[in-house]
Image (cartoon, rainbow, N blue to C red; front, side, top):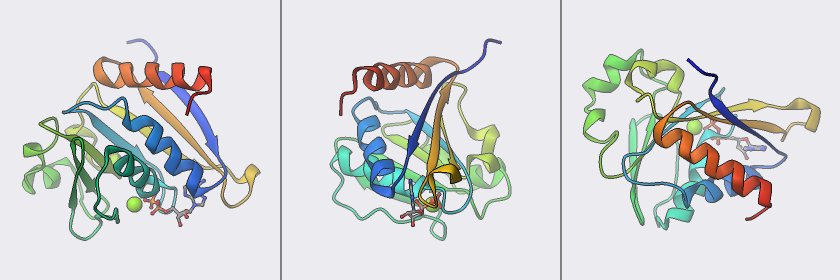
Amino acid sequence: MSEPEQLKVVTDSAQATEMLGQRLARFLHPADVIAFYGDLGAGKTTFVRGLAAAIGAPEQVKSPTFVLMHIYQGRLPIYHFDAYRLKNAGDLYNIGAEDYIGTDGVACLEWSERVEEMLPADCLRVKIYYHTALGPNGRELIFEASQGRGLEIVEALKKQNDTGEN
Ligand code: ADP
Ligand code: MG
């Protein structure tokens, strides 16, 4: 299989990461799946906050760690999952997640490491790392996909990035 397509972006504040979420939102369609990776406090929820704001959702974005899923209703529904407390993909299946993932809205999954088997092959992966060279607020975000919708979104983001659009 060919190497996945990637875009790397560095941010130096929570606001900058939120802005990236906002910039991604315009490319999203129903049934898209965004799989987030990265440690506690990396900025996964922060990114989804920007995304939900740009989709026009009035709800407050909080971590779904304890409730497993939040729904934000804007131009499209956003199904925001957190697999932190799940052991594996079977647990996600058991909470009925397949009724939401890949249906009428955009699914955002934090802690995708835990539920890799539930991710469609055409998902967009967003990996967030601490980038300490930039200080405590430095983060590196890697957008990655190898086929289908995920790949289309990475290509659109790259084009947007090259033209320096907001
Ligand atoms: P996660 O969902 O990955 O556990 P959160 O988004 O809940 O992470 O929290 C990220 C924390 O890090 C917030 O307190 C945010 O203000 C802070 N932060 C500092 N710098 C950044 C940055 N560049 N991007 C995202 N969050 C940042
Ligand atoms: Mg979170």
